[in-house]
Length: 288
Image (tube, rainbow, N blue to C red; front, side, top):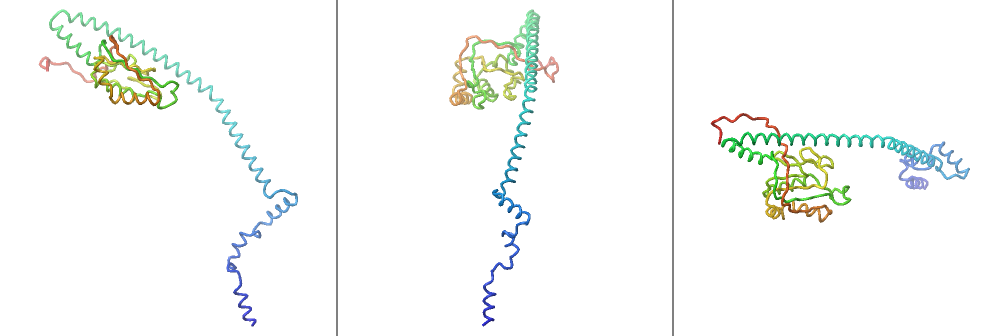
């Protein structure tokens, strides 16, 4: 009988008796005696368990964050006047260089006009000179090396009102590229953007928020003047890729897009690059 009782006693033992170490780790007995003494002292003083340490840690973190924010704010305030001065200096330098470039361009235009007058006078004395003058005039017109005037279709595009910060309400270089390409395709004989004559090698690019034509910055609004038959140009532009693009931007973002006809528009000569590879034409090659 005792044997059976002992057997029953052994059978009733806890199934996790062999895992006593893990059980102790997850029980109150696993606590370090020092932690237990500290908890007893807090309980004797009526303090909630563990609040003192957590409160001190939170205060320390808040204090560190406050110090970091104060240091960052002071550094930003210190650098702000320096950045403003540097920006003003750069703007002033850009304006000075632009004015200098404009003055040089005016001198070049005056020298070009004087050279053209002297050339015309020299070629006017003979029949060969007249033929050379006509051929030279045709070549200058094709290369945009001479001023041009006549009837024109004028297209004006501009950023949306108070929309300079909105990416969709700003005119980009791609918008002007598409417009100019469609005007060339419509039969324009000469095109200028804000008074700058486009040549066969002209490039319309963007640099940050600025639009450049041959590396010269433009100011808004952007006025594209296309010489040619205004009715033909207007009919060809209607429904083109540029027209659909600009009309969609106007309807969605209030971007300005207008067209008008001018009976007498003038465009200056373009900047013709100097030839890098050239040789005199031999007598036998003339007329080919």
